[in-house]
Length: 152
Image 1 (spheres, one colour):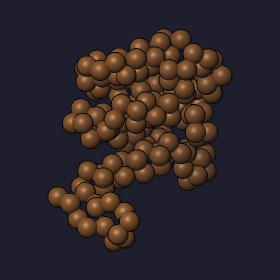
Image 2 (cartoon, rainbow, N blue to C red):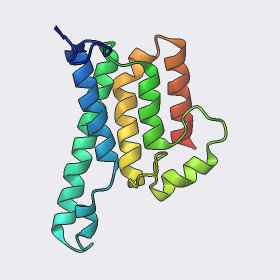
Image 3 (cartoon, one colour):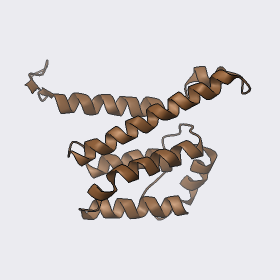
């Protein structure tokens, strides 16, 4: 369904647009390390549980983004941006500086994330979108670059 926009200059509001906006905000917020989890002392049990919940939400969001690509609601370029947020510059031949950041747990947008979680999310996304991406040239290039970076 399509709903008229509040402003005449803005395109109409659709369910797909609202869903994509929510997914984008959720993904970006999950990439940031919440200050509340950083304040919990390392030895406390709550920190591990919070990190597990955070990781599960991030994995679920990444899976949803992959399924949106499969339904042609997202473009391959958006998935490339998601992979870059997780792994650094995907498709860039000189990614060694970004690889250092990933190993240090820093994503391309400067957010901290444990290396293992970033790699797990990237692998999950690639598993969901692999078959769909193989059908177009840009998708094949994206898959090749991402797997090379994961191997490196």
